[in-house]
Image (cartoon, rainbow, N blue to C red; front, side):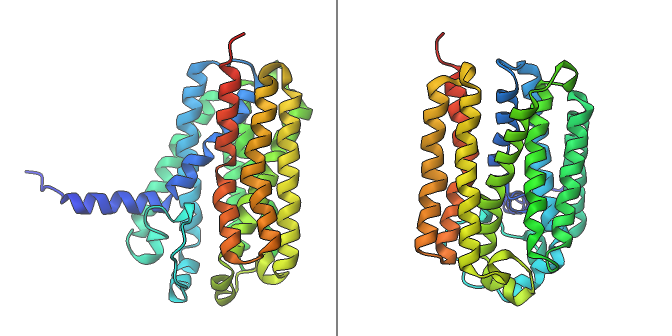
Length: 314
C-alpha cells in the first residue's frame, strides 16, 4: 500500500523545483525562440510551433536549473553573507537557490536537469538537427559562464551568445536552412537578443548582487569596473536593443506593419529606455533591479505585439 505524501511536502518540493529553475524567468524566456519563429516565416505551422513550445519550456527550465547546479558551492557561501532581501525580484519566485539552502538534494536537482535536458534535446532534434546543436551549444556556453564566475568580468559575452543562439533555435524550428535563410535578418535577431540579455538581465542582475559578489570574490563589471562604467555599458546595450528591435520590425514590415513598429517602440521605451535612464541618474543596486525586472518582460511584450500584428485582418 502506497504511503500518502503530505500536501505541504508536495507543495514545498514544487516550490523548490520552480525556484531551482527560476520558473518565472524561464517561462518568460520561452518568448525568445517563439519570436524567432514568428519572424522567420509568415504563419509557421502550428504543429511545429507546439513542439517548439514544449522544447523551449523544457530547455529553459533545464538551463536555469543547471546554472544553480553548477553554482551550488558558490551559492552556499552566498547565503553565509546574505544581505536582507526585501525587494521584488523576478528571479526569486519560488525558493531562491533551494539547492544551496538544503531544500533540494543534489541528486534530485541533477535528475531534474538531466530529464528536462533530454526532453528538450529529443524534441529539438525532431524539429531539426540544427535546433539540437544550438541547444547543446547554448548549454555549454552557460557552463563556461559559471566556471568563469571568479575569473573575469567579461564572461557576460558568453551568456549573451547563449541567449542569442537559443532564440535562433526557434527560427530554425520553423524555417530549416535547406529552404534558404535570410541571414542579415537572422544575424540582427541574434544580436538583438544577445544585447538584451547582456544589458537588460546579466549586467544589471550582477549590479543588484554586488554586495554579495564582493564577499564571494565573484568578478563582475559592477564589482571590477564600478557603477559608473557599468551604467554606461548597460545603457549602450539597452539602446542597441531598442534600436535593433525597431529595425527588425521595419525589416519585417510586410508581415507586421505599423503594429509591429509602434508596439516595439512602446515596449522598448517602457522596458528598456525609461529604466535605463533612471539607472544613469540613480546608479544604485535597487535601481538596477528595477531595470532587470522590467527588461525581463521585454521579449514577452514584443511577442504579444507580433501576435497582434499577425492576427490583424487583411
